[in-house]
Image (cartoon, rainbow, N blue to C red; front, side):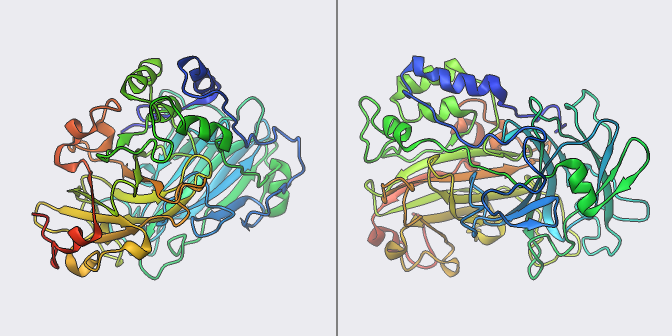
Length: 462
């Protein structure tokens, strides 16, 4: 998938459409917070929330385990580092790093405080002379020489991107905004995959080379990140949509996953079927937000334990590279990574827990799986790996807005192979995920804990 083909961008136009759903009766008011200061409006090092930092350039690590950084639905197997800066005219910013000992890494550029604009995936990066890119199938993942250098340009993504270049265009004079991601570090490695995070080097128009604090001063580097949160009042308006039960909305008695396309369609989930159709007709475009990964596509599904004590999610797992135990060489997979997470709501954008592909036991050669979602005190005795079941704990705070029985699941597919046509990437509307994904679509079934336990260990679905 080329960068231009996979580009997501909500931009000001997309936010305007989200606000304009008032006309559809979806919400009465949208309150979005978190617009960052623009240009040099604040002093270098501005960090109003006291976020963790690495040096003066990078903010992070962003992890789900840190309450200060658990925002925008992070995966618990994923770590992020961000940078916000303004490149002076004629200057060139480069990032020098080493490929991590991990499943996947990438650089993403954003606009409008969290709308994806472009990305540079590890598999696209040419290593420095004499080094190896260990992310490529069949490469030596333990190679000692694994360095790379990329350039960051303050302009929009062109039709023909230059190799090893990330295009990070500022929005309306605001800071450039990038994230560096590392997925699934090898067991025993640090969050960065044991290689640290890239070092920035700035070359000014007159040839002067800056690093460290002088670089940050020149770039006006800041550490200001705020979540794009839905106001509690707007959330209550959504929950109380006509004809819907506010105690369970938008969950349905028959659980279902819906691909994330844009905010308008997320709001449409809280309405009846006609309202969902209306929301889709109003905005059928894919528009990323919430600091989405340009290399990922997502599905979300609301659940409520008022429909059953536990939720069993079952489907067929796509093949993935096997890397967790530091495998020397890996084969390519149908997707680079798969995961499933329990999350709260747009009021908090918090993640509770995730399981990724290598943590989910396969129950047959067809790679069918069962992920059991429940509260901790309702966990069935056979919801464990030895029985062929992955347990995913529900957030004890529910949706984070007062409904402890409610929550959501999020699942993502990273970079499907060209020949795999059953991934989330192939879903073309909020209504055809099951059709497009076939056996790979994750179905959900509510049941009582005793009914689940009656299926034994090893777990037998039928």
